[in-house]
Amino acid sequence: MVLLRKKLDKYRARQVFIPGGQPTHTYNPRTSLNLEESLEKAKDYLCKLVMMTGSTKSGKTVLTNKIFPKKGTIWFDGGSFTNEQDFWLEIIHQLDAYVDERLTSINEDSSQGGVKVGMEKQLVLFKVKGEASATISGKKGINSTRSRKGNPKTIALQILRSKKIPLIIDDFHYLPREQQAKLVRAVKALIFDGLPVVFIAIPHRRLDAVKVEREMTGRIETISVPPWKTIELIEIPKIGFPLLNCELSDALVENLAEEAIGSPHLMQEFCRELCSMLDITETLPSKMRITQIEDQLFRTVALNTGKVIFDKLSKGPRQRADRVQRQLTNGTSTDIYGLVLHALAHLRPGLDTIEYETLRSAIREVIVGTQPQAHEVTRVLDKMSQIAASDESSTPVIDWEKDERILHVTDPFFAFYLRWGIE
Image 1: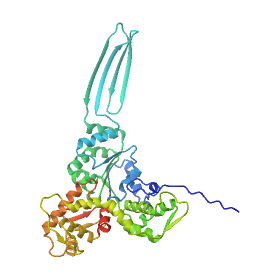
Image 2 (image 1 turned 90 degrees about the vertical axis):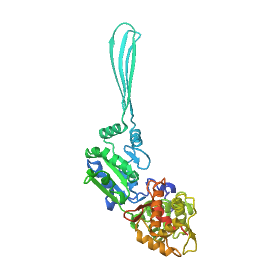
Image 3 (image 1 turned 90 degrees about the horizontal axis):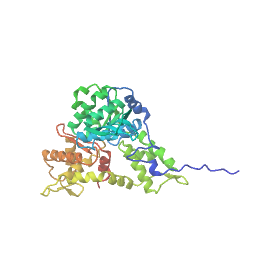
Image 4 (image 1 turned 45 degrees about the vertical axis):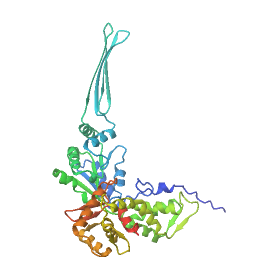
């Protein structure tokens, strides 16, 4: 008797694990949280602004894209425009509409004596043509054109209202406060009319829409995307690696999940890097069992994802005078910017809110000798927050609230670098 071996479907590793993209094979809907069902309500005449909140790289954009695919929906990145005019022009572009309106009148004789009287109007969204026929003698021709430029904001709002096209603003928190206010006021009437509008933001900025427009109080539906639990994160490798004919031990899977700081994006990075280290490019012909990994995997991911912004924060703003070097307990020396970052790394934070006094205590533990004055530390935190806000990433990796004297670590890649990227 000959046993026939079942032929395995082949998958590419880069199609299985997709950090930063829309996963298909390894998407986890987290059904116990009813997140998809809550977001679906926005389609059913909710008449409220939906505020989707969650930590950076927690999967809130992936979830929103699942319910509101970009095809047939207006998606906009809050960090991709510098003024209100650019925003509305981009909306019009996505609507395949026009700002200009042109009206052309035509009165032209035919060679047989028939006259065609017509009108062509270039509207903001489409063309309309009308024609009529008459019979007169002789040959005459008249062609006149009138044109005008419409207001991009008015045009965009008119089409959104008439077509009921959902509007999604990703990284709403990244908009300047003035732009936030103008946007909320502009779409407020559309929301009350039932247009689905979703703003995506990080948790501690979830009330921005209320702060800039008090009339939105009670008219906001908040959907919170919590950090992923270990049991949710382990689904990614448990689903993905069998597609590549690989088996990971339970201990290894749990280790990866614990290091991911509640971020599915980081877990996807771990899985892809593991495939790269083991030279797994597609489904293997024979099963591979993996029981352990080297710490180098985590260091590599940390360097690839968090080093650039860490270096920017470490350098601080440009200045002429050399900064005072301070001795650290690990035997190295650095200036005050490096000192604050080393103290932060000493705390090994996740996506945390850190009280100023907690950071000051960490500085005392990593410095040799006299610690800097309180005003020096707060000045550094303020400058770092400004640098982080001016970075190309849509969400600053840290956010210093000077009045509250608390520091938010908002990016899992940055937090992960603080754990694994600093020797």
